[in-house]
Image: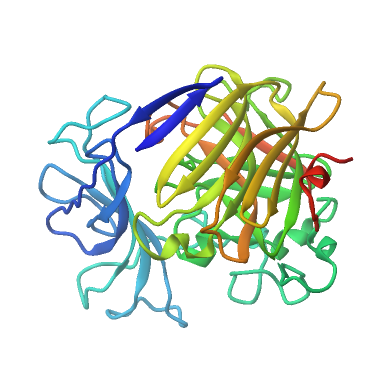
Length: 380
């Protein structure tokens, strides 16, 4: 079951599992299947380029992993494919309206091209920095805290564009398409990391943009963040479930289907009002709580033992207040901890890929600290 709470009112939705396939495909991979009310992972097949000959179409986006510049027949190109035919129901597709997308690879020896180049799919661009192969934090970065030393070395005040290369990215680490059009530090917004997501979001088995460090032990992560409309940066986003915030995630989440395990706290346009969303997801079942408030402010997630605490001090609020407490004994010692964004664009169980998001997500800073008590989570 998945549960949603709106100002304390709890709603539930039953979940199911579907495995889908299309004909004539050369891109294989784990994907998301929305044929039932559950956004579960299934197999999505589709050509790396172009549509199938039957009624369903598969699109693939990826890159060629060859070391040379040639597209030889046996190169493996990682790609992203999805089956496009679906109905107009935001919440559930009919039996004949599958909509699935998946990250995969082209393993045909002769027929299928590996996919698009790096800049087109938004993956490894020069702006993001990283090590020599464009993936992962640079050698001079402190991006992992193993429990020893100063956790504060993970902090980023976003006043130096070069620190973008110090963040892990879920798309690069997991070989999936980047779900944003632009990300920069101190460029779009002075002294901020600014992100413009494409349709995507964190719900059940689905994900969105995620920039993170790896953190072990008990900790607090705090961000100053705002989610605004693209048309007017002084206004909140206009579309539902358009938000920005922080996420703590089990690194094993991406290794198996129906295995997403994380806690998220974000701010922005929620289902019917502006405010915060606290969400816990266990084995891809998401429970979320929505509360009204401004579209900007300070958010915290604290982990003490198996307890995860969410606290906020939004614009106009005088102090931090504890908003949600989740028990997560399943979390390992080392977690992925960082910035996330959601651009669903609709009130439904999957993002609307046909709508251009109305979201500018901007973080003023991300700060990490070691804590020992629940009181530490609310202290200034």
